[in-house]
Structure formats: C-alpha cells, structure tokens
Length: 629
Image (cartoon, rainbow, N blue to C red):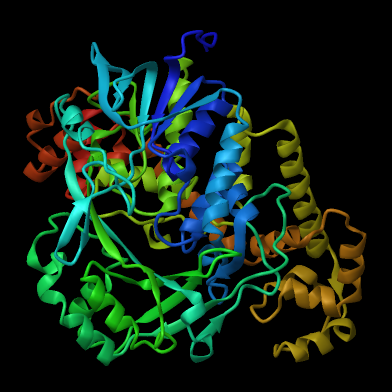
C-alpha cells in the first residue's frame, strides 16, 4: 500500500454511505491497511437501524456470526448494545438454529461511530456525493454536494435507500432517504451515463408508538432466552438483564378500517412503481394477498433501554396516517396508544447486481464496488456482509492480490453474493436458510471453524484469535474422543434412559452410542452419568459452546459427511473457468434461452453457469465439451 498521502483529498479507497454496508466496508478496508475516507450525509447516524431495532434472525443470524468469524464488527456491536437475545428454531435441527437480538437503536449507532473512530487509517467527511469520477474506464474519485473533489484508487458505493428516494404516506409523497433525511438526487444519472443500468425498488417501515400508552397486560409477553447467548466468538459481554417483546394480533375490525384507506394507498393506486419485498409485505398488502386470514401477528419491540418508543413489527404501511392510527387503536393493548410517527413506504433506485463480479466490483467501471441495498437486497445483515466483502476486495485489488471469494459451501455470505451475481434480483433480496443447499455445513455454531483461518490469512484475525480457535476445537476433539472410547454399564445408565423415555441397556455400550439416540442429550449425560460429569469438570476447555458443538458433530456426523461429499463433487465444476470473452451466440448447440442468459450474466465458471435460471444440464454439457473436457 502506498504511503498515506499528505493531501487531504487523496485516499486509497472512498466509501460512500455509512449504513451497515458502508460501515463494514470502511472498517475492513482500513483494518487491512488502506487509507479510507468514509463519506456520509449525517455522522450522527452511522450504522443507523432504519427499520426494526434488531440484528439476526433466520439465516441472518448465521451471516452475522460469519462476519464476526471473519473479523467484521456487526456481531461485536450487537453484543455491546443488545437488550434481548433469543435463539430461534431450537425445536428444529441445528442447521436451522438462528441467533437474534433486540438492540438499543441509539446505542447501536453510537457504538458504530466510536468503533470506527478508533481505526487509525479511517477518515470521515459529512456530505453528499453527487458524481463519480471515472478516468480511462476506472473509478478515480467522487465530487460532493459542496463541490469538493476527493480522489481515490477505488470507490465503494453503499448508498442504501438514498438514491432518488421518495417517501410515501397516503397521498403525500416527498423526497427522502429515510424519514427526516434528504435523498441523493444526482448520482444515479451520473452512473447511468457511464453505462450502468438502474431500476426501482420499494420498502417500508411501521409506525412507532409510545410504550407508556400501551396495555401490555392484554398482550403475550415474549421474553429472551433464560441463558442469553451472543453473536461474537470473541469475549464480548454476556447480557445479564433483558427487556421483553410482546405479541398481539390484528382483527377483522382492524382490517376493515385499513381498507378504508386503500383508495389513497400509493401501493394500490400505482404511484409506487418499485417492487416491494415479497417476504416482508406491508399490512395492506397482507390483507389483500391473504384475504382468508382473520388476523395477523404484531410483535411489539422496545427501541432501547431508556426510551418509551416501541416498534410495531408486522404493521409496515404507507396508508394515510389517520387510517394507520385509527386501525391500530382497535388492536388489543393499543386502545389508548399515542404515536411518535406513522409508517411509510420508501421508493429508491438500485443497480441490478448481475452487473458485478463476485468481488462486488463493477463489470462496467473498474475499481468501482457496490454493496448493500444499492444491489437490491434488504436487511442490515445482508448489507453488512456485502460491505465487508467489498472493503476486503477493494483493498486486495490495490495490493495486486486475488479477490477474496467465498463459495456456497463455505458461507451464507457466499450464497448471498452468488445468488445476486448469478441470478440477479427484481425484488428486495432476503436471505433464508432454504436458499443454502449446504445448510448442515453452514451452521451458526461453526462459523469460526469455517472462516477464522481465512480471516487470519487475510490479516483480519489476530494470532490470539487463531490460537483461541485451535484450542476450542482441540477441546471438542478431546470430548468427542472420550465419548467414543468410554463404555457405560447398564446399571449406570438405565435410570437415565428411563427418565428420557428410551430403551434400557442389557449390556455395556459406548457413551457415543447412547448420545446418538434422539431422546438423549449430552446435558442429560452430564447430569446423570458420573463418568461424564467428572470428565467435563476436569476438562478446562469444556465450556458450554464446546459441549454443544461436540454433540452436534456426533449426532449429525453422517449428514455432515454426506453433504461435504456432495459439495466436494460440485466444487469441481465450480473451478472450471469460462472464457469471459466467449461468444455464446456462436454455440448453436446451446438452447436459445441459455445463449441469451449466458450472454447477459457472463458467468465466470461452469458452476456459476449451472445456477443460472434457464440454463439446463444439457447446456452445461455443451459448455464442458466446448472447454475440451
């Protein structure tokens, strides 16, 4: 990396936008050694939780643990600011377990700013970017609203919902990137002038209410886990006190009131042109699409430790505010509710992500990277993952090193980016466990095992962190080895087997054989079998996460092995490169749809080509023959 420039306006990398993508991008690039400038419209809103005050959830929690395992900051900041923790889907297999936290919205943003300000190579500028500077086909800097030019070797755009953002509330509409903040008007046209394609999307956010006016006794309390977990694999603080969320429901009366506003809804009158999120629809959209449903869930979530503000999860709306308020007051517990602000929809520009390479670099403009909602995704976690990867790859390119690409079998982050680049998206993309074909391998509990060694090679994980990882998995192997080698007699085990509702032993057996029974957990064995209890007591490394990981590896060993074999077989296709200049229209043996799709996406490997919708196995055979295989 070059020596840090003396001129204030020259940097290695410029990051535009300080949302979840921009913050992770700036941190990863600067921590690797690049001199970074982070430009944001409002320095008091870094890492702002624009929608619900939570981190994680189904598949999203896995992404946060992956970011942490790689040396990113979202997990640490969530741990430092959480007010509740829950592990979702514990009734299902461990591939589905997903950590989720409620966070203090204000503290989360403050913590992000403080962490970023501690990074020596990172500078800040409060302004709006209006133009990208392009010289000889590569990004060279930006110009701001105040007319200042900053130069850089690479630029990362993480503009969120701010590009030509329009806020809709009933028949009212006004410009804004989010409530109370202006949108960015000029950058889209500037980028289109260089050959990038843009489109429109829509998202929404619910009303905020005054918790002092709610009757929580009429709702169902949703407490956190009795023993709360956390996201980071580091020694972050464990939550001691928690705030509860609450569950209530809409009703047919509520729906009838909401319907009175449909004629003024921008969603139904056509004023909103952008496509909205399929899996997080507005309340009016849910009523329309699921007309047979008499009620819908509402989760009432606190916004922080010291505030009375609550977020009404499930009541996203762009209906007139008076309709929103009248309907909500018919919900149990909301009879006397007062409101801080209405829900609203926001429509904004995005750039279809199949215009990017797997490093998130533009195929049109070299050294330009895009990350977050500008790529058509929704969710803090998806944005943070893209920003983190864009920051790494922008730095690596300046070093003349190969890009850092995660495979689908290595991380949910790999699934996310591969889906975006290969398939594109015409609606806000949200991660689900069902999108990952290797989800038994991609569990939240083993993210450090999968990724921390890679982070150490990059320079984002310290030697101490790698040492802690090795010690942890050495302890897991010691515990597994003990369970595989140690036998238990019937008279020692049968009382426990009775309590657990499973057949008694007639002869001695290995402990691991007992643990393979679905009715038996390792906690049962520690509680009821003295040999196991004594071993764990003496094993200094056998902490809770080590014990849980050992049990998962034993119970799911066959499934894990089978899935890894499949991943290894398919990886051979993944490593067969395609010539980026090949003219697919000249390969007449391909179907016409395949020629069209391949020409548009320009896949880098056979594996990527095989995942493109409309490209058949027969088309893949043609490509393999073309490669001389």
